[in-house]
Amino acid sequence: MIGEQDPATASEMVAVKQLGIIHLFCLSGLHLVVLCGVVRGLFARLGLTKETSRGLLLILLPLYWVVGGGSVSLGRASMMMELQLLGQLVGLRGMLPWAISLLIQTLISPSILLSMGGQLSYLLSFCLTWFEQPSGLKQTLRLSLVSLPPLLHSVYQFHLLSLVINYLMIPFFSLIIMPLTIGGGILYPLFPGLGAVVNAGLILFHRGLAALANLPGTITFGKVPAWVAVSLVLLTMVTWEKRGAVKWLVLGYVVTFVWLHFPLQGEVTFVDIGQGDCIIIREPFNRRVMMIDTGGKLNFQTEGWKKRTNSATDKATSTSLNYLKSEGIDHLDAVWLSHSDADHIGYLPTVLTSMRVERLYVPAGMEKMTKFTKRLPSNTRTQIIPITNQAPGFGGLNILHPFTPGEATNDDSVVLAGEFGGKRFVFTGDLPQAGELAVLAYYPNLRATVVKLGHHGSKTSSSPTFLKQVGARVGIISAGRNNRYGHPNQETLTTLAQLHIQTYSTQTQGMITYRYNSRGGHFITHNTPEQLQLSN
Image (cartoon, rainbow, N blue to C red; front, side, top):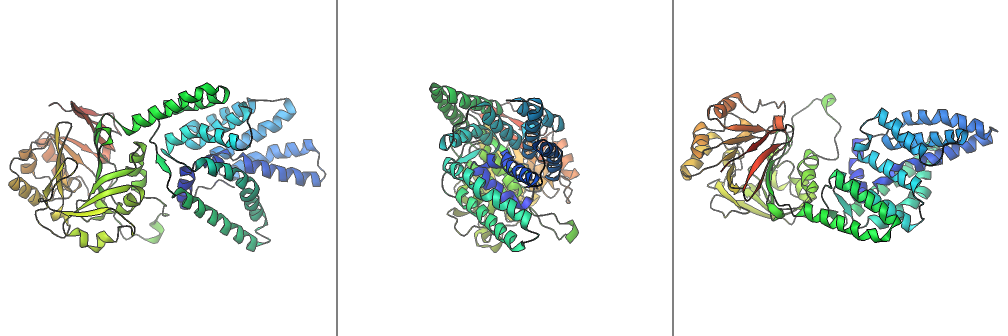
């Protein structure tokens, strides 16, 4: 009711977005209409005239918006209500209140239409104002379809149950959720027991939404580009007036879906996961999609006053998994774990619960370790495969290390090599210099254009002999900003400079992507406009 943004509610909002009912939260005019109706009724009981009631509401509505936290949707609803009240005095009609509201809020917050809340709030209120709306299921269908492109641009997925849930939720919100919430809030000081019952009901309601969101039927569509989303919104509106335009709308969705799910290019992406490692390998047409390490957070003992409020999601949700879903990917053919350190496997539970994972490769010996097995969901169907360099590779990756089963420490790190876009890559985990030289002795003909530098650029890895003999031209460092270890070490950076190795770091350049096709590829860094073309 007051627009508070609590991190603890993040999981509920994820379910709301997946089910496609986020627009119910973005309109916000519903409870404002109820509140204004209650206030008008009280003023009438007190014997105030309609004109006086209007004047008082014109004063109270801006105050309510301030108390409500100044949220986008509440601001739009408050401004439009204000303008409607003014319109009754000066004759404003039609789209003018909507247009003036958007103008004012854009002056206050210039990025208003860049957020999903702002887009849905103003888009749906525009449709409800501009078009003559039918009632019942047809109106629900219209609102669901017109809100779908912005949702796909921001959330990348939708649920097949969305239409049914929307149809049921609109009256449920109007007749049950809003009256109980407002009544429970107002009467809580006098009847705290009633407030507790209402709150328990809301908690049950949120759990029900989460359960529905977890039912089969979620389609990961991918991120619809902004210009495509605008085109689909306009096409949707055209279908309301011309039935023959439906086929063009369907064609638009089909073409966009195929374009997102069957890309012509492949990629090797080094995710900006913080102080850890996470690499995504995607072949052209999404034939195979793999991940090397999941990243993870290293937990250190912290004084109580320094601890932050726990969020319902971790960094994998907002980075690697979010990126995969934006590409229309809902499964991984393989996840490779280099060793057992938390900054390499800490987000494994999130990956396994958010994505269908076919195979999980771990260094031999790690499959029996408690620090690994406790991270596996109880109902996982993923095949666990312990490996040494004698095991067969998968997805174009060959296993170079470990040579024997071990304890999944840095010394036992899995080392992988593969060719993508005509360039050889080597991924070294946290393998120290002695291990690098051992790999070189075992594979004296090993060559690599690109090397994922060991141990986040620490001086304990990245042996000059190793880098020189494999012929590395590009070194990738995955390290967190302002990390306590001082990674990457200056000694490593000096070695790279002396060997004339082009260096990229997630610490400064964010996510680093090598995009390739059959003719070759190039690097793209996401925090800087830098691009490197690799010649054959």
